[in-house]
Length: 72
Image 1 (cartoon, rainbow, N blue to C red):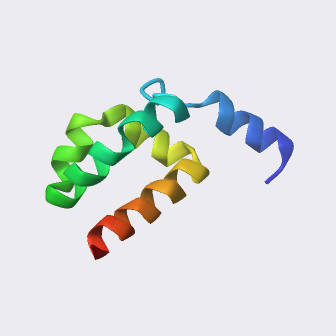
Image 2: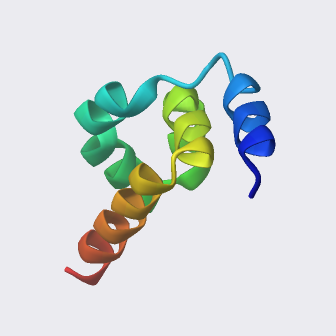
């Protein structure tokens, strides 16, 4: 990815994106709700959904936590 396309992606950040800190604060609740009802999780935490689409490290944390909780 070129530096100009990275800049364009950064500048097009979803205004609903709550960022890493807020996502980290509620990710456990989002995981639990997602396991129960994925659509309810999306509706309850739209800013987290927007953030996970944009932030690869947080998305990896979410997927790992989701897999760990689902396996237990």
